[in-house]
Image (cartoon, rainbow, N blue to C red; front, side, top):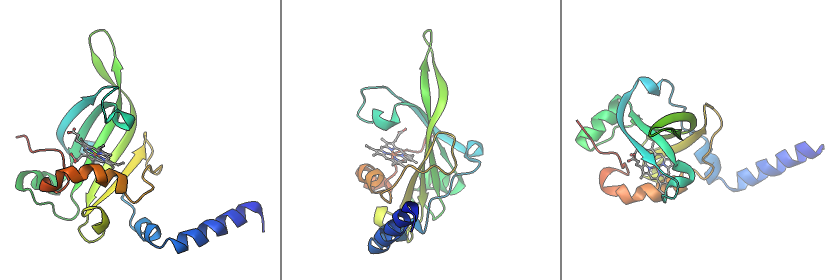
Length: 162
Ligand code: HEC
């Protein structure tokens, strides 16, 4: 067996033992193709030094698809509701702040059954402009831990603004 093969089979054996993470991998959150044409819900700038700065420092825009827009207004999110957290570098110029490179795309997709472990939401992050370089390796537990403070609004921080 080559070294790579041995590593691979060890990894597979470990994954089999850990059942749960493997199950979580069975329903990966899809890249939110076309989200820049969705509804813009809000924007925010997070400066260095803020508790969320690592990794969320920069300018972010939050986009929602049609079901999530309805959810923002009714407080009830149908399966398939998607929120996108589009995070860009903040470029400081002469008395201006402008958008720089994309840092990551954070996604929350509603799937009440599929994502029971994390409040009925699937969490994922995609690095930079990548559609397949995934950032979440714990099934979304760390993301959910912080979103749990918003239990009264189905774990969503964003509020409806007409
Ligand atoms: C330490 C707290 C914290 C962690 C950890 C965290 N978030 Fe959030 N998230 C927030 C806050 C605060 C907002 C609201 C930002 C705003 O108001 O613009 C937010 C907003 C979002 C939104 C927009 C929907 C909403 O709830 O308003 C998405 C999508 C999102 N986060 C995805 C993620 C993903 C994916 C992860 C894990 C990789 C993650 N978050 C981890 C605090 C957190």
